[in-house]
Image (tube, rainbow, N blue to C red; front, side):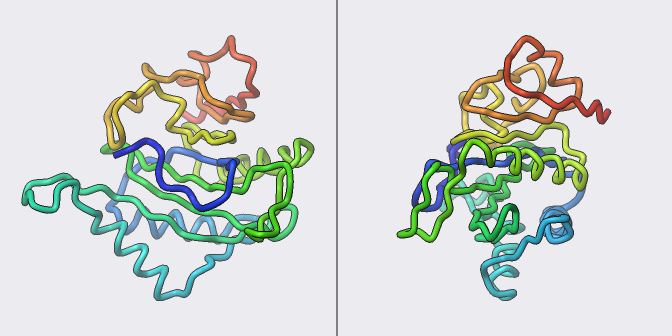
Length: 210
């Protein structure tokens, strides 16, 4: 599976992204993620009906096969949900949840990242002086999820911080393969990851959660 999932129309995208430990079954994991997002101190609304949201959850839990004709094929677990977030106002975003290893999910929030508004897509741009708003959003997400690694970057997911050539899922999303690459503006990391990138210039917040 490609490390880059299908994006909504428009772009470039500013991506607020973090890793989530898969400690439970798929249904409990996605239900917990969605519940915690709805309880953030910024308002999050799902831009689909309750029935459509239930279908998205079911699709994630069931997964989709790598090879339809192979009864022993691997099943990918991923979904995409349109949402609205009240950050500095009403913003459209796309929530992606995907399994990237046996024990990790990636939770990605994609925002229209151009510095200019795009009325034709009903999208608001993001200027440099607004970037602290999205850094604060990642801070708020950490307070909810206490994730091991999170990031804010342009066209860069948190999984892009790893030197992994094959697609996900992969068991190579481990500290030994951490590489600070891509267009990142902010990273939250536990000390396990930060030690490998201490010489880099990107802003890194050390939480030492372990």
